[in-house]
Every structure is written in C-alpha cells, then in structure tokens.
Amino acid sequence: MLQVTSKNVGRFLVLTAAAFTLSACVTQGNLGQDEGIGFRQARFEQISVMRDYRKCKDEALNLDQKARASGEAARYLSSARLLEKCEAEIGPDAAGAAKGERLRAYALSIQNYFKGGDVAKARENLQKLKQAHPRADLYFADGSSFVETMEVLLGMKDKGAIAKFSVANVNGELKSELRRVRYWKRN
Image 1 (cartoon, rainbow, N blue to C red):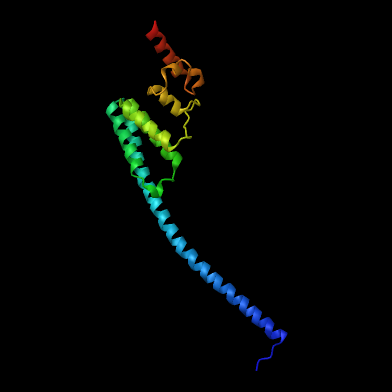
Image 2: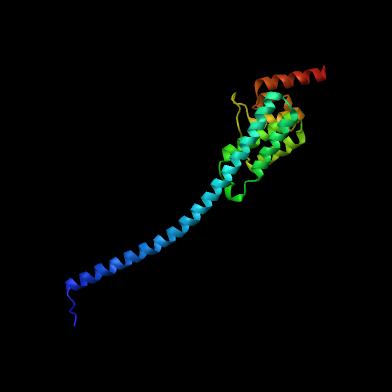
C-alpha cells in the first residue's frame, strides 16, 4: 500500500500542477492557431484588395496627370470615374484600410469632376465624403480646407455666407476672386 508521506504528497502536487499547466497550454495553443489562421487569411484578403485598389488608383492618377498636361475635360472626368470605381470595389472586409490614402484619392475625384464640368456629380460626391467622414478634412499646401473650398466652388455655401469669406478656411486668392466677381455682378 502507498503510504502518505510529505514526500509523496509533494510529488503528487507537482505532477498535478504540471498536468494542469500542460493542459492549459495545449488548449490555448489550439485556440491561438485557429484564430491565427483566420486572421492571416483575412489579412491576406485585405492586402489583396488594397493591392488591386492601388493598381486601379495608379491608373487613375496617370489619367489625372495626362488631364493636367492637356487640359481636356474628358480626361478629368475619366480619372474621376476611375477613382470612384476604385473606391467602390473595396468591400467591407477592407473598408478600414488606408483611410487617409483613400480619402485623398476620393477628394481628387471630386476635384476632377469639377474640373471636367460635372458639377452635380462633384456636389454629390462631396456630400458622400462628408457623410462617410463627418469630421475629416484635407488641407492644401497653404492651409486652406478642401471641404470648405469645394463647398464654395460648388455653390454649396449660402449666398449670404460668400460675403463672409473671412471666416471660411479658403485660399486667399479664391476669396479675393469671388469677392471681385460678386462686386462686378452688383455694379
């Protein structure tokens, strides 16, 4: 028969503790592997979507560069449509990826719709941008706000607010030009 001694009790406790520790490690290890595989697969899909997006965006930026060189409205519109298509092809799996990059590209599409002469589409997309990113804005090199500048150019600001350009974060040259136009319309 097994005698209960402090030596035997100690061995029993050590073996029991080791068994619990090993079983916990195995269980956690299995969970980690399953989650890791799912995470890796989701991440790979997200990377693939972003790779396709960037390839599409690069084509649109190439069109934009050609439009700037030639000044043709049709090229601006083609670039804007392609940028919009690139954004639309991003599914919900990659919706949170590269938000800043995608925001800049979508803003360029709004500008290109405006430069191409499709003011209604530019207004519509500016509204979409504001709804999708309510507190987001981009800033030009001089510090002026993209959203406020486009609202002024697209006629989305109240006509009474045009006189108060000093409170709008718009380029100084644009402010003076709009004030000049307003003056000559009245006089």
